[in-house]
Amino acid sequence: MYNKHKMFKGGTTDMPKTARIFRFAGLLAPAIFIIYGTLIQLDYINAPHPINVWILYILSFWWVLLSLLDFFTPKRSRLDSILRLACYHLLIGSYLIFVAGITSPFSAGWLILMIMSFIDFPKYGLQISAFSFLIVIMADYILWGGRATIVYDLITIVSFLSISIVVPYLTKPKKATKITLDHDKSQESLQQNRVLTIINNLSDAVISTNSNGTIKVYNAASLNLLDTNDSLNGKHINEILPLTDQDGNKVDMLKELQNAKTTIKRDDLNYSFDENEKMRLEITFSPIHNSYSKLDNNSTNVGYVIIMRDVTKAKSLEEERDEFISVISHELRTPITIAEGTISNVQIMMERPDIPSEMLKDAIKTAHDQVIFLANMVNDLSALSRAERGVGDDAENIDVQELAHKLINKYTPEATAKSLALNLDLSPTIGNVFASRLYLEELLQNFITNAIKYTKEGSIDIKISQKNNAITFAVKDSGIGISKTDQAKVFNKFYRSEDYRTRETGGTGLGLYVAAKLANKLGTKIQLISRLNFGSTFSFSLPKSEEKSNN
Image: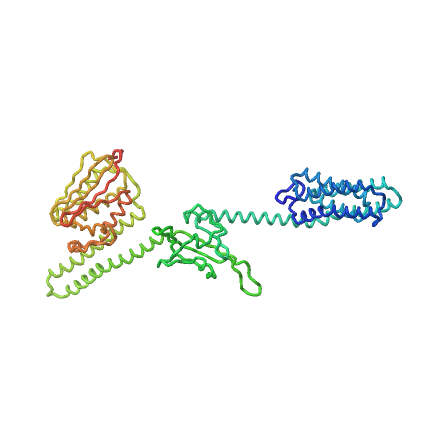
């Protein structure tokens, strides 16, 4: 029996059909030879020489035993193949010499031996088998020599020598074809491994299914995307991809694949991990066509390729951007319209001498207020842009005391202009923080300017304290305060309270949204304590730095 998974040195065992033929022939041959010998014993066939019946029985016994062994037990080694071939040569040689005769049709059995020897040992097997046959012929001549025997033996020798010469040449094309086939298989395997390596190194999830939607191939990114370690082989695409559209309707992925005639791309599908967690997917899928007919353009889909990526964050940013542009356009339209209309009216009024100067001053002040509003919005947008782009991400060691005095000196004139007291409460040994100076200054400035804006009378206190290894910054005012309902919304972009006192200040609705972004960049969170008509306190904490200031 030939082992098709192994290859012996100098021979090949990758011929399962040939191997099966030889195994069945070996199993059938003993019965034919025994019947032939029996017919000779019964004088139905004339024997070329006397036959010893015991020799016939002994040869038949060993022949049956060897054929059964060869049929049910595979060859295990090169030595095993050599021993079995040697036994077959001895049995057939003995049968030809003592039973059938060299000139009998059973000499063709030696041809089978020669082919078997050539298959297992292509380098020397055929030559050794042919030489062994010469020995058998010589033994036949020695035992049963005669003139007729010599002629028949010479004819047989010439025939077998001719065959032994022709067989290698006949098998050369087959060997060349096999070499080419092996090379093609090797190249195909190499290309397949390369493709699989490329697919496995893609960051996008790639899944290939058959025409029924059963998964056949997938890459490592698919497991990461679907957050699983289980094998996907053999699973149905609808089983591993429970999808819904933007309206919450279930999407049958197999039907989508079957309806696809060309490559289709969709980015409106959600993958549900559970009821509370969803992921927005961008899915590109395409049918795989096996071949095209020369007579028409019809083809058969043998499967589908699906490429997926997580676009949850990108889509969220895109929707946020679109909303932002829409809102900012609306917010800008009003002050620009007011400023443009007011300035246009001033131009008309200046042409009329009867218009009082006070009316002109009021109109110009209205236009100026709108320009200031636009300038504040631009400043807020600029701060937001810097925070989003990480312009001020570089941290440094900041002397908190120096920063506090700088802010007091900067905003005291503005507070004094509204008759407000701007107080500073901090320890002279407050220490340092390691953070972005730009973000920290803008965050504190935001709190201070808001406090001045929404406080009509009283004071504004800047308190900086230390507890354990944290420094807390707080800005407290005695202004109008914020209702509990509004406290949950004041950090949303463009949100402004419906309180008429808030509307009087003309804020942009971006200040606290920008402040929340800056706090997030600093790695902290804003705490808000407020009560209507009793003022507000905005605070946050940063870890204290052990380094001393460079100043």
